[in-house]
Image (cartoon, rainbow, N blue to C red; front, side):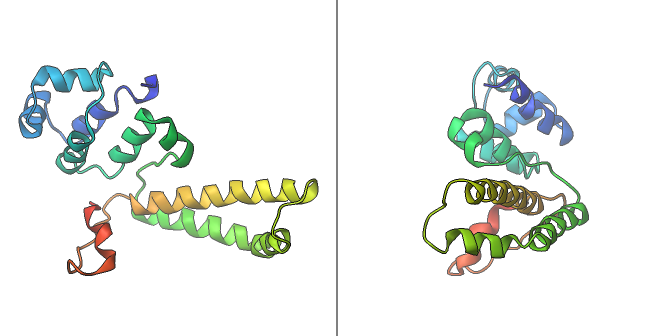
Length: 167
């Protein structure tokens, strides 16, 4: 596991104001097991991390855990900082407005109009657009996991029910 992530479990537990003993009890594991997870000696199973997210009221621990434990997630998921809601909204809107101001939607339509990205300037512009879109995705995820965001679950048949796990 990457050294940057070794203390994530302890950091989130401490932020929740919980001792190792109390957290281990609520997680249904030995204190030594939790200590090993927090020291990066072993990796907790996903079901325990899911429980940690709930117990610690942490919106971002799951993303941090995935990025730390799988190369695939590191390549796909941006780093997510838990921001205050207002700051997350402003960042997302700013990035979207900046994208529009650069006429990127039009650039993207022009580049893709023939069904491929040609070499040269088109390829360079396309790579820039992908980077800007990645920044928008990151800002959207920071909004999704912003401090104080609570999404109330819909009826079981409601397709938006996937979002019921947000704290």
